[in-house]
Image 1 (cartoon, rainbow, N blue to C red):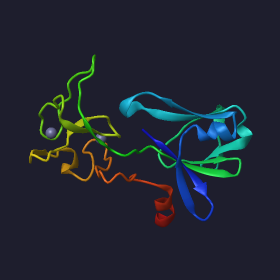
Image 2 (image 1 turned 180 degrees about the vertical axis):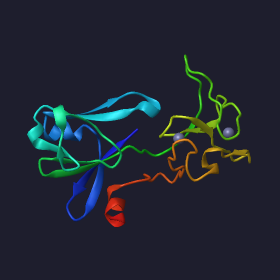
Image 3 (image 1 turned 120 degrees about the vertical axis):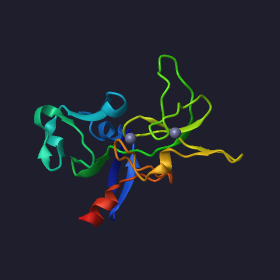
Length: 169
Ligand SMILES: [Zn+2]
Ligand SMILES: [Zn+2]
């Protein structure tokens, strides 16, 4: 998963869908490819004159975006983030899928159990916190995913946004 931010007047940023780029300039497009931990977003530009990434023209009209890349489209600035927000869902085994084993407790993630799929590496973790008092909070056990370091905060806020970049220099 990933997201795109657009610079707004007055040092502000807003989260926008990937399609925004081709709406601005049809010769430029962001394309999602791959799945899970191998998923990525590529920037394609037929007319390279309009677009640069991190201040550089994109070679061959193709650039695979990396976390925190700055994209300049005309005079509009964008930032790309490879992170997304983890959410608690009710796990249900889908056809053709192998039942996941939670990396923290080594137990299977069973149908109907609350779980989080790590947005960074796609692994499933228990996150059971029921009113009946049943708790198995494997996902939030540590502050970051032990495999890919994705933050486990469930506050709904993105782990990184462009404003943070400005503050950190
Ligand atoms: Zn577990
Ligand atoms: Zn992970």
